[in-house]
Image (tube, rainbow, N blue to C red; front, side, top):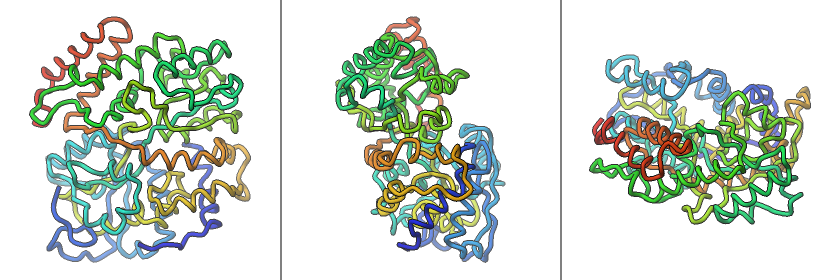
Length: 465
């Protein structure tokens, strides 16, 4: 692994060059380099089709950035970015069709962690143990956990969605309280209610009648042995305490009045931050890209920490929001060696990852990059030609220099819920019953029993899909 090419000055220049773009916001055994044993050497450059969702801009910026550090990649491959749909579910559909037809299988695919079990269980993903070999000891434990399925590495970590609590530091200071006072769920609720009493037009959180599905994953993933069903296909949602705790905690917040009844990503959500109606968010690390654009005038007023422990729930500092986003190499695609070489440089190599950070703001996930990132956060320099508006939305500017260390620390608290091959359907069913529970259309027992019955009836054994 190459170390030491990227100076702080170079990193800051890269960070600044893309700030405007940021504001718009198992199973074959590979030989060294990632190709299956016995695969013929590839004559480059070959074209790698990389399938993602939503748009191509971010992927193209990363591609340009990594090649600026490793120009030899140009001799090996070029990248064609393909949009598989508006979201990760559509990408999964497109890959299923390609695999069923046996043609047009993309070389590289971006998924969320929730889709990995399905394709890994079907043995459609290239095993990456050997490709990861020189890098594994340097990666945050959360990044490794994100990329594992049944004990094997089958992914590259694009983004670890660790759990981060954002809150109006100035307003909590005005009350004389801090996040250290929020050890239990009851503490959190009491402080949240007092927050609204102190600031009648403001709330510590938002939580509407149809909470984002990621609330479920964030809370459940803190429980080390929780899962939807055991390996025999027996559903556990009515038996395992994690599900009752999760439903009840969300209901307690919803009923307490500490949260304004606005759903995430609704038409009112962004404006409510700007209007100081929403003054906190139990959410994931990706919120660093959105909050500064939601409330740009509030820079310097927000604090950040790990989630509170929230006893008697499982320690809620741990867990993740759906694990995170990953990239995989379909085992039946072409150019396996070129694909893994490219992805190694982008996601596992420090210099490549730092270059991509400069282009997109996506944090490198290796321990050896920490000092560089911390130094850059402590010595910010606005690039020439950048507007104040764009500069002030950069996370380390908006949240302050302490933010970077908190985000990096959060990666060692990541736990990934053990999604099975039917995870998408299971989460949807569980979410539907949570909504009924919040609306008092079902008791806690009825909601969990109903979710279990629906999973049994609509899915059957989740491992036999």
